[in-house]
Length: 348
Image 1 (cartoon, helix red, strand yellow):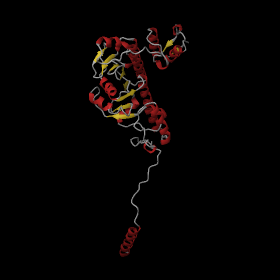
Image 2 (cartoon, rainbow, N blue to C red):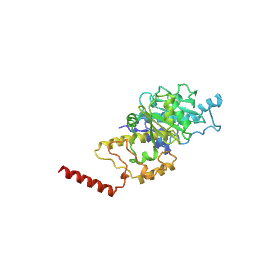
Image 3 (cartoon, one colour):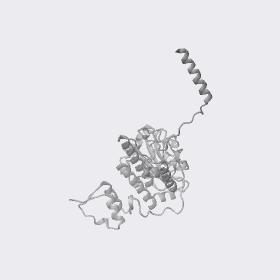
Image 4 (tube, rainbow, N blue to C red):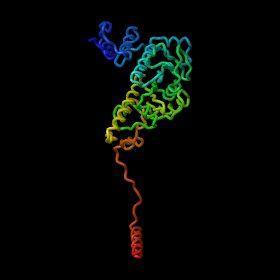
């Protein structure tokens, strides 16, 4: 029986220094492994774990901006450094498509590459079948500076995130079904349930506006100071990362797995067990040390869990405070009792 080779098998061969060229001729390659092998054969990628370049070509010594000369921008766009970034965009696009986070031509990705310029994915191309030569270079006003294909129609949202949040090095937008279900319902996923979600994602909901419009981008951008993952009402999800494009994509995996898990939990038939505020406080300390924003940083333990929007039984572990009313007046109570007794006596 022929051996089946996956992308992970090839990545492990590269990491261990084994010669991938010596694969038997009768092996069966998975689709992602075949794409990865083509990239290796083209000499475009020496992959580390996760398919990202182990040693990416150096960035240009001179920082670029929209004011750089056309010759400088073209030189960058066709440089080895830009080629590596384009391949990363293609790699993330394939992962989105393979996980069914995008359909048709949906979804878009961008990487900041200068003061006010970014590489982005093209419009009308499936994220699962993009090529490096399909990528586009744009300025922060959405003007295309380089690239044969037209840039994504939703680039303004990515650029407004980068304008508002200087730490945003990469952005990723897609339509993962479980997360988008929460966006359509207008409900935030409950908190205090799974550590990975609490540490790596900080979620908010932006109101719906027509995709691709400045209004939509503005509503999303208003949330990115304290949140790195935004549910877009009746649309999908967008995330940003201060590390790299793969990390922006990881936010999607984490959020989608979380939303799917809590929906399964809601069907089990008993209330979900949640973390204590003290346990959540420990996770938020880790989150803050990683430089990940969250509006709960600095809050007291009793303020951390609030799941009022989520109905199937998830509540905060902090007991509700007893409502305090006015102190009873003994004399007034005695007078009321006397009058009540007199009325009852007359009735009898």
